[in-house]
Image (cartoon, rainbow, N blue to C red):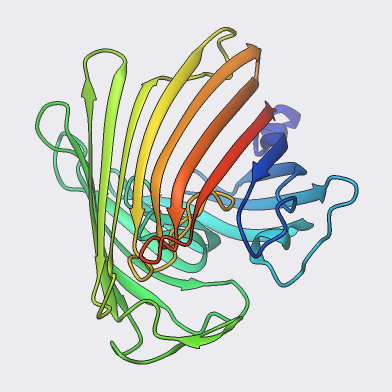
Length: 312
């Protein structure tokens, strides 16, 4: 009975130390230097249901200023996300509650915390799935939600797709209220087409194309090439990657900016390396060079980031 009770609860996650060297204008260049913990809890309810939570804690390095107006600085150690995952039928699944959700392989159209529901079901023997969803962003000031349909999984030999359509509860020219005021910065609908394929044994190519119905600068592109990859379980494993981004000012709903490294209205390249020096410890270093405010070519951003994750 004790063994059965213990197996119902699982805690896991990682602790990160991160340092950035960034010349970005108009922001605190040190606000991403941090000690960070990402803690997950899984609680088995039954054979069909699992209750989950996620808690994020950020401690800025000494001398850094905490700015509560920034969404990515509100991770103060409380339990930010609570949701349940369930299964049904032969391969069906459903997720209900507040959690991180993304659309597309690289989460360009949408990638962030939302309240809502998402469900899916396999439609081919290869594993292609159809999914429906409703999402309402949970960040302070968000006054919109969206729903849609997605298809993702393998089709044919060595080719995966991730396609999604999103319809907002706003008109095309209706302003969306944000923490910094209002502005028609999304449009009323958007879609993403992404695909991935292995190139030989060690390379994987991923591409995303996003478009919204905003009246200008309304598409985004992201290409990523991976070589191998660091595995927490295998000491000495490593990976290399190269990325190209061309993000429109209105070319997404709420895409994942990956802690400020992928910003709207930017075009440039990112090169990175991952390495496992000790078991369950992964070290990643990247360099980004991008035109930010790319239509005015105001300046070239240079970002150097190194971080180490301790998985448990």
